[in-house]
Image (cartoon, rainbow, N blue to C red):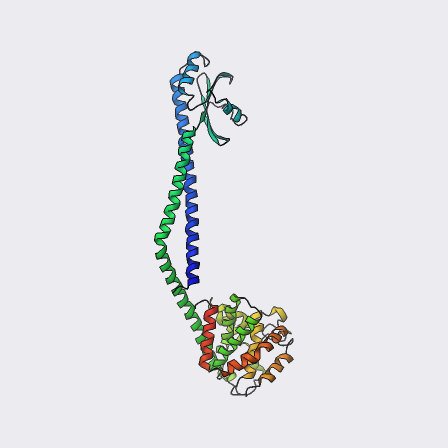
Length: 413
């Protein structure tokens, strides 16, 4: 089921996507239609000019400034070509006819018109002036040149504008209508994707839990330690405002911190007494072994910061690299505090649990050498209540609590 917030968020994204797509496609339709209209208007201007030239000027030999030529221009051209100029071979103007009341066009286009072609090739140019569209048509003649200024009349401009608006609105509304019709399907598919994603994520968390528990069972009886220390880590991280996203790495790393112990021989891992120098050297390799194991999984690789660095010490005397201070990732510094605290306060086959007070004294003593002192100060403030709550909970309750916390931070509730 989609939660109300998730449903509203999904609906908002779909609405925005539909509006964006409708606007984009409407704009594209407007551009395409505008280009088509421009091409059509230009063709009409050229066709009308060529027809006039072919019919009235193509075979003339009596000159371009005769009364017959002027009469033809006035009778057949001025409705659409308010300005017509005729030039001789030397590009001297022989005739200029301007439609009555259109004298302002010549003034408006001054400096914007193109010169006569020198290559005897016809040409046309679109010119915008004061919100009006004009097309300058230049046609070479046997005896000179024809120049006409085609004006898109007001009625045609209005019809074109209405057509463009109608086309744009039609495309926009079609996209919106399609979005409305497809909305139930998109929501159903979205629910399926979310359900599948949550199932996959839950499976990955279970895999992390199984892997961590399997390692813990090899390492004495510390299975509950993984759950408890991860909860401690979450509480400390929350107290120092660790970003929500980093909480995921913290949870994975806390639960899998000792995953590399799977590669440590039982004779060393389960040895009840103190390890020899060589045995301890082998034991320390579990951090790099853990890093190698996690490299095989892109999802579990989020745990690497803790797995590789949880034995580093704040003063630089830890392993495997001997880094110090803020060189140690914050998640690893957080985990180092809670890991030692839980080890001190827990019963193991080789030791009895230490009291809360004594454990906190050790943390304070080693602040600045082993642990980040600021994290120790913060943890000491919250540790008593956490300790009491954790040690009153049955193991099954602790495990369930961690699953809920993981579900929250991984977003699968």
